Image (cartoon, rainbow, N blue to C red):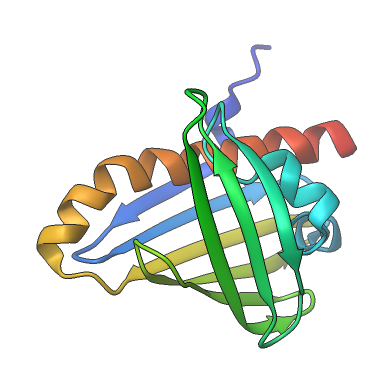
Length: 157
């Protein structure tokens, strides 16, 4: 039987200023949550395909910050700062992306009898016209990031 990598891609929905990606991973919720909350895992999957992530500061707690640089395949660096609003192990992480494009992200981790349903919602603060431009790279970038998470989880299980 041919394995289809897209079987875990339940949906990507794009609203006026919102992107929602839903995936199901064939691993326990605690493992998926650890990949989101431990820097040694995040650095392996965060960002679109071909990007690397280098962390400067990492405080995984409500009010804590994650400062990092994403480096594209062309060498261009994108400094990022996320501020954690809520960290509720193992169910939910909420953070504010504090540089352009500004957004509030919520990751919800649901246990499905040993599998994990992840719903990742980003609500952008920029107006609809700006979001129309941002979503051109944000949607495929977010999907590729989730693909990289899926690949890491598969290598760990």
